[in-house]
Image (cartoon, rainbow, N blue to C red; front, side):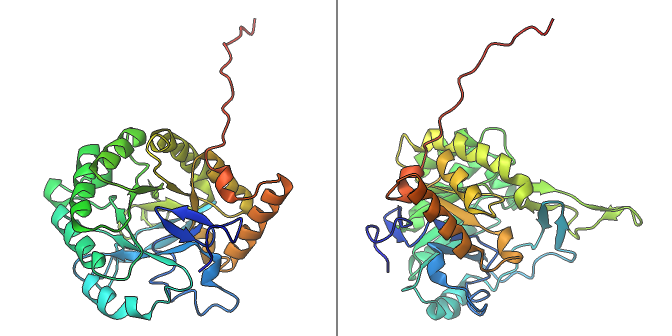
Amino acid sequence: MTTISDSPLAVDFCGLNFNTPLVLLSGCVGFGEEYTRVAGFSNRDAGAICLKGTTGEPRLGNAPHRIYETPEGMLNAIGLQNPGVDKVVREILPTLDFSETRFIANVSGSTIEEYEEVTRRFDDSPIDAIEINISCPNVKEGGVAFGNDPAMSARVVEACRRATSKPLITKLSPNQTDIAANARGCIEAGSDAFAVINTLMGMAIDIESRTPIIGNNQGGLSGPAIKPVALLKVHQVYQVCREHGIPIIGQGGITTAEDAIEFLIAGASAVGIGTALFYDPLICGKINRGIKAYLEKHNMASVRQLTGTLTLNSPRPATRCC
């Protein structure tokens, strides 16, 4: 694999060498096999690939419709359809080429015990790192999402930390009051990194039937529409992370090199590509070339020099208009 010193695009993420700062996001590339059959696609364009969310037992997912295109975005409510951790570890992981890129497991669960057990199964596997999807509903607490409550978020991270020595990436939800406070609690519980942000909750309505278009009534909104929110959340979480040297995967609506560069400046060490892959499977190469051109233009030797370089405007006192 490309080493950190070989390429201006290479990054060190939790001790893992990424060929580029791009990470293909969970749920967008299946278990890595969906895009390998696209002509011209190369795993080497991605620093890492996040596998599809995996639970303890197989899940069929939600009833249709499960995806709906919106202006500048997409709603999805797949419902974590997956074959279960046993099949993923025994049958799918052995088919992946770990010499081309890094692979990150995505752990989901309905209870803290399920999170811990699935994490333990991935710990005893060749997977490079583990991402925790804490936006799942807690069935023991009336369906409240783990990620929307700082105390529950920390408990999930703590349980997963007990189950693995691999790098642990906590995927933070934007659907909460204080994302920075949640991040601080997750760091104390043992998180090595963050993915910021998960989808925003949204709805679409069929005006003829007067019913939600999504079978689950609501779904996660992704795509360019959420980019301004995602940028702010990355900036807010970075204020906590920089004190501890904790890296961030910034994600939410990235479709161009300029988008990716904004997230890096805001505090991300790597950037996630998701919804854009659905309409342009070869977008990673284009984004990489754009980032490299930016580095050359600004006489920067490494993409790592961009992280956290945002300079805020000085606040100005309000002026009277009359």
